[in-house]
Image 1: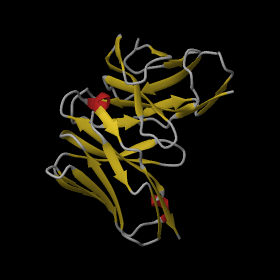
Image 2 (image 1 turned 30 degrees about the horizontal axis):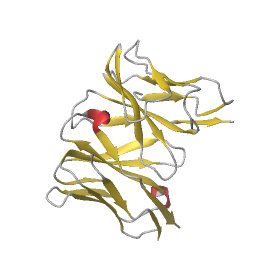
Image 3 (image 1 turned 60 degrees about the vertical axis):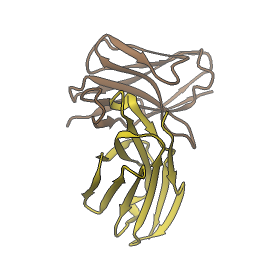
Image 4 (image 1 turned 30 degrees about the vertical axis):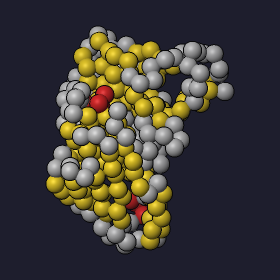
Length: 112
Length: 114
């Protein structure tokens, strides 16, 4: 089974700072997902990527398949970005959410 | 608006009682999933269903049961056999069980057993 490691576990930054959250995994994957969980608990899918880079607003996700590593960047961070960010990987076999392995999450706090 | 609805948001039960968590989706998704989240741990798969009237055990199915009588509904019952039922439970769905299929999550139900 894939091992998914996220770093850092906790991150506190000031509003406006550039944020980077890292995710590494141990076995080849078909796709990597970045999810956002707000204090209420609900989870929103931010990105699903299998190569290269994706951008949505102030969020950027990159993946390096050879190095088995992905990063989530937040530019011009804002207090509303405060949440838990979760990395999950889809196995090469199996599919959908039954094939997902989740990291433990990175708890991000952006202070005004 | 299409989405996944979990109810209730908070649930309290006495030890030894069975309790059923509701999950409904109007996304016309074939696949549905139940996860458990504990502090400091990643989400763990309890059960999943790829089609109506069929479901499979996930990594931590012991003490739980599910049904999938309708495409839009996938209720989870936490039975008295579950040793540590207090947790946050998340339901998800996806269009199909493919390797690059995006999953959509509900808002979760926080179950506390006293």
